[in-house]
Length: 296
Image 1 (cartoon, rainbow, N blue to C red):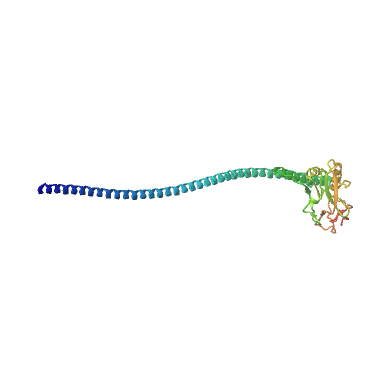
Image 2: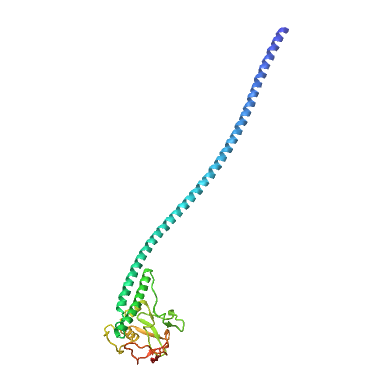
């Protein structure tokens, strides 16, 4: 092989190597590009994952807020329901109050009518007669009965029972000792009342019993069939007549010594004012139950 051939061959070899180097250089650039792109993709992926995590946290945050709002909404609805129920109860109570006011108004009207009727019945035209005294005593007992019936209705309306009913004159009575009603073994058809130091018995002034027995007690009518025009004093006083009625009604009467004494606010040592048909020889009862002469 001559020199020229050798040169040609070397030139071809150099050219091929240069092409190979150029190709390798291009492949290296591509490899770097791919590496760069891969890094960029990884970075983008990290950013996306971070954004997703942030979004997930935001979603959880708002889900909690939504749950809290739902809880508040449920609580508010519960409060609304309670307020609506209370409003209905208030409306019902108001309706009841209006009805009670109407009943009270009607009761007052009836009471006024009864008072007018009573005033006519209890006039002073028959002053000094048995009828005058009898009507007032029976009016007193009827008022006692009305009080008993009111207590009975109240107990029924409120679903309970009274253990004992007491008849007492708080405006005209005194108790020397505390009366412990629970200490008495009160049985049906038994009446407990007072007896004064003088021996005078007064179930009309003070008595107590269980409710059913008291119903019989306050059903008593004083001098029911008596001649109301009488002006003598030959008749039983209310307490004596009541005591007989209790025995006749098969009730036992127990007398507690001075458990309750009357307190009279007028001085019996002072003269008695004259009035028609006054029984001047009749005696008065003082605060100890003693019979005393009238002062004239």
